[in-house]
Image 1 (cartoon, one colour):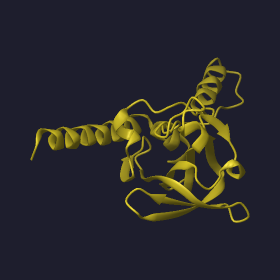
Image 2: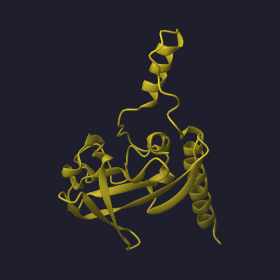
Image 3: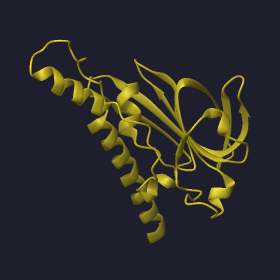
Length: 189
């Protein structure tokens, strides 16, 4: 086995461990709901819970290893002691059915993946929050699906349009933002 192969395997392994560690360390339940009590803790609790409910973020992914993910499956322990299964698929959008809220992606390995969006599916297009209806055939997309006790389904779609990928905009074909597994699992597991 050559040095390039060893380095590629090592980088892939480290990337997978980093993703799992992030999800393990930061995923979990949202904690207790704030009470209507007038105790001094109530405002702090409410502020803490509000901080946990993150706004949809569509920033570029930082680790280079995660940009090359074609398909991945992880089982992640949550803070609540439960487990969540996360599946990631990346490829070119070959079909979008707005009426049925389904999206079909053809991965680089030739496999085709179809997923159904829900009202809780978050969509990022070209680094900005978007809607399911804005996705088009030919865009590159990353689908993140979650199966847990609290949520099962397509959790996030992050897409880059061909115009952005060709350099007309700020995103590149590999800049799939919003792939923060901890925020993905905060609400799902």
